[in-house]
Image (cartoon, rainbow, N blue to C red; front, side, top):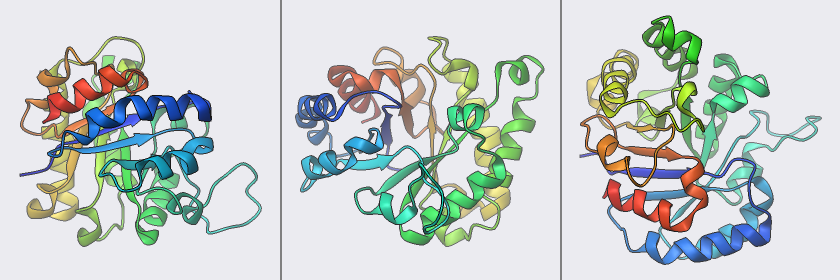
Length: 251
């Protein structure tokens, strides 16, 4: 059995003071749900403070990105070691990074390798655009992203990965894929390509999340599907009550 996993991606929201209040508000509810791995991913500016708040709890902390180099002349970037100082997890290859900041399958692969090398758990995002979805290319696009993004990862390391399927047309639009559509892509594309890459035994251990307009009201529909092991939550992660309800649905 794969342990359910729910991560909140706060994106570019919340100052340090606001982040502190939000975590304080949601922490009692999150701590009560022991059967789910719970992770919050605030902006970089809040990582140090939130790390202190989560110390001694079982709630994990994740960053929203990293650079693959150890150090150097990369203005505005953060190295794996800088992230590891505070975090256990890191989101890699989110569609917004791909769309606005030049992330590619190749750079995603470099970041995944760098995260694993330093002991971070990568949450690797894959997903198709609206044009690709409407053209019937979902399977091809997602298969390519899984294959190229996880290229040359060893099976023993792959077990620790988390993969998040996020149809780009459903992120922040209020338009979620149906639970059936999400299960179809996650089971028949993502999971099957993980089997090809790492073998069935390892692929069955890898947790795959759904992301894209998941709310307290529809979370149980998604999490009830056999291959959907939790969610990467955007907007609803910014409301303590909603995020706790989604975690409870995963339980």
